[in-house]
Length: 472
Image (cartoon, rainbow, N blue to C red; front, side):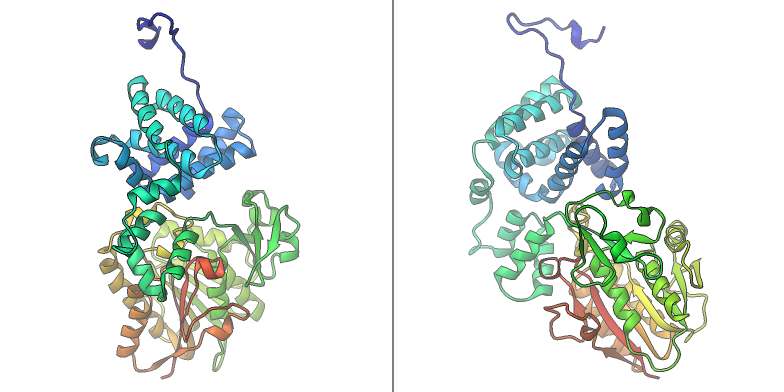
């Protein structure tokens, strides 16, 4: 007999065992993994969902709710923290993290879903009883009842500083981004208030799943037979799953003939592959190939032209992911584990080189919502020397007349134009190529010659691309 069952019962209030809610317990477990182990939700959630489907019989609606609870809570963490701070009688840092996770799940249900308020509070308090115990469940109940007294707009009026007094702090609270990220994105985007608000709002939307039909191995026509599938907006190889869906259920994805790849990532690979060259076009390099999405597309494109791809990745386990992504490619390719700043190949060995460099990932906040809370401004100082070194290596690795693609999944100016400008000042035998004509049909590409894609303008991650031709 448990200790709980031996507790004296209050007259008129018979003991009620907490009801286990597999959907909300799963969401809580995912948030704890993100917090405790610095895990990424997109890696933690799928295995948890698979186990829950097998163990608890979760259906499609259940898994959709669990996914929304996890991603929505992570995206809106900054906003919810501001609201909870107004409802808790002590600093949030003094609230135990598991309690804070339960509270945040409750706030998300109250303020950002169609779940009725009474049901959101009741379900969250039941979750608290299961994972935290009766005492903390009472605290959760009291706080959520305060939150339920107003809607999201009403709370934002109360907790967000006026825009006129502090625009960046206002946007940080309203759109749930760290202030320094708001500032950096605004600088990169330029323009007025409307553009930055649209961008921040897009970061908080769940992105569609986008597939790529690898040339010569799958076709978009095949992928479009899937339920709720639609053509990509810009890439001729892209197919969007407009209502989500499980990519692993697609036969071509299971067989490696297609993959999951953001359309912006596809456009970067296509632009490099289609950039005009002077001379032969036989040897291609992906110098930072992990985890393999761009390398797989490049390998398929190279195979159609009789070219060979060398995919290099510093981390051996990520090189293994690249090898898996390229398995079955019809053309010649090789995967190696090598440091791109100290390459084992000879200078001038390649006709085309892609360097998709490590970065802060601020362009993929839609997909990795927890990243915005983990990154710090000082992280830029760590990436900057590596990014410059990799671009210099790329320019040394390409032959005269060949083309280098420098790409990042970050729009931060310190990781994009500042890197390219600094390296080109030191490297006099290279020139920028206008990348805009190589993205046909894509609007709002700016003044060039480099290209910055945006979630709110293009429906892609905020990918950056500069094309550089070696001239001597």
